[in-house]
Image 1 (cartoon, rainbow, N blue to C red):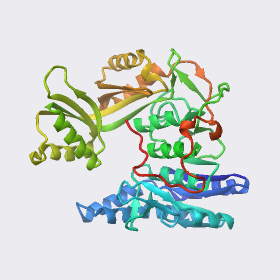
Image 2 (image 1 turned 120 degrees about the vertical axis):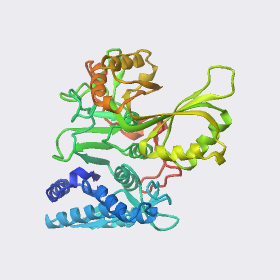
Image 3 (image 1 turned 135 degrees about the vertical axis):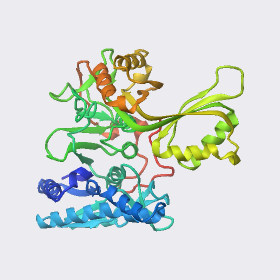
Image 4 (image 1 turned 90 degrees about the horizontal axis):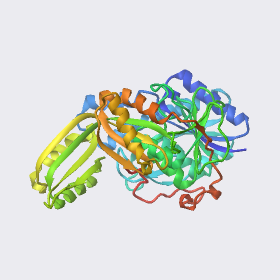
Length: 454
């Protein structure tokens, strides 16, 4: 008998019919002899509706109260699924994040889980019940207030509970049948992976793949939680495992690892839109440090894409990429002369997207940026700020070019023969750099949060 944490996303509980189907799948797992803890997101569209309600009464919502409002979306899903389970003869109780023992720091809207106390969940499991936990939320250890975890927070809730409970694995139930080399709903020829390593999945997540939140993958790797990504339509169909290492087995029909023709496995192609680029000309090193410190203190999400000069002058250029919603805050910061951030020029470009090719070691292949730029040129897509890391090659392009560019880049890189499938191995046999950092049954994460970095 296994202990499984199942996390159902918003599309998987978007209607009463889908809630009933989720309950049926939970019941089936119980009938197979497994213990199950369920984590749920808000019903599809519910969070946006709550945000609209908040904006109807105030332009500047108090963060504490906004978190209290938004947490009700997941609470409603948890109660509904628990009702459906009880109706189907499965004893169940719903829990808020706080009731489930999830403790966070005090940052409203982007809190970090610092501790999980799963005793109440264990008590219900011992009574043969199915706990259903509202994802995306917790309780501040400093103030006792309700906090929310930010984008993908329900994924992180599921992984954190799996780690704290010592679960066999965590299932991420979504509207696609696993992790693909690109979004199968928009890219022709996208292939499903049997398995991926934590590194590959984390790189895909920060690059814009929406199947798993980047923070949840980092938590899973740190605490040794194996992930299974499957579709909400069936519990026994195709899936992707995310875990430590690779197997040496052969390919599974219909599943794939792909190569780019020169021996480099390609995990996938992903894009993220809604970005803005700001290039600051002739800014001194002291002013650069002051600016970066201000951005860090304000916790503005920003990517430093280029910094330096080509001559003997002290002043240089810096290129920053950030989400559109953060652009106004950066403009205000640059306009505040009292902060002493002096620059001669600022150039802004909006309506951008970042397109990335992810693969272990791809950044060490000199042909990779060449093939990427050739593919974009073939469709006359804009291209700027090529960025190369060990496992990723990315470029900025126009938002309107992203769909066509993603297809041609996918065709270019995901065109080789199928490679051996990847399966998780026993964490005890994994690379020691990925060893557990917390005791099974108790999660205690040091601040700051484990965040996937550029």
